[in-house]
Figure 1: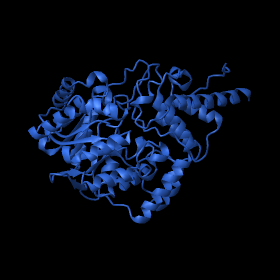
Figure 2: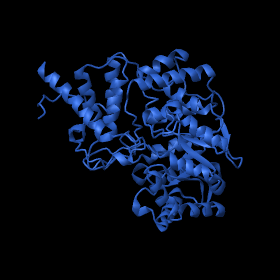
Figure 3: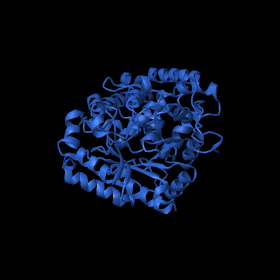
Length: 458
């Protein structure tokens, strides 16, 4: 039985504010935005297979801003009634992106509690820009077995068109094709005729480019490339950043390193779209191991800037998707890519050392995608895992009491903390990083419990 402890008082601050103030009190710099966010020139552009100019920075509509200052891929409360999307702020952000040369917008029927396509469509319609001025990417996100039948896939596509206020999609993706292994991929796209139907949509002009996003089983990726001659993939979306470039297999032996994925696609002249350039914020959030390597190279550059520069250095990268909830991050990322300065060989070597330093911290490879949510028992899984990583990456380890306060701020509702996990495992198959979530939660619970008992004994 766990020991009862006194409840710790916690200032009435947001999770982000409290974690920042806690770390600042430990002597850790927490600035996460560059001092200067003014572009030096026009947005760097790349070309798609048809010669169309594509902005190097793309907008990922997975973390749309909410009226409470959070983002819509978060499940705010037990009961999962998250705060509504701030359409007014989103409209202003989308217009700013367009005005500064960003023309690639990526969404999915599965994003933001199913609201992403509608809200993005509303924002683009309100921007005053013509349909030809921007590029829309969305996905056949038929994850549930009841969505496998072809008529359900067709309904999903037509619904996407309606929500996005368009009669064609520029880039259409088979969504996360490796999740669940080849058997699941076959049921989602082959046995039901969905892939052949997508090829027909492209021939009819209802989609202009056909591709896929890849997580998971390498056999599925290899099958797609082996059949490139048949399906003529126009692009592929992969997880790529300076950690996954050479170390994805170290995180999980099932993974394929981004370097391998990139080179295989480049050899076939299939353009690359990048997701998770910041590893769900882990390469942008303050991290002493990363900062120690990178800050001496450029004291004014943020960690996010280094991550984007790494990705843009590779010429077959068509666009880099970033889920930019706050306007200040939009401004910074635009400045980084306007124009993008490729990394030198020496800088790439330093980024490799930074990646190795991060891996030594043994952080949990959670990218905060929230595919594991909602938890049927109300846990805030991403917040718990992120809290653990924040503690591990601090320059000065927080005291036991500071750590407990940080936990209380990260997960204010006690019913949503790790000690309420029953180990049902329903979250596990949904994680693109294949994290053993129940195991990690059990370890965090045991660690927190030890800290509480130590505090109670003092």
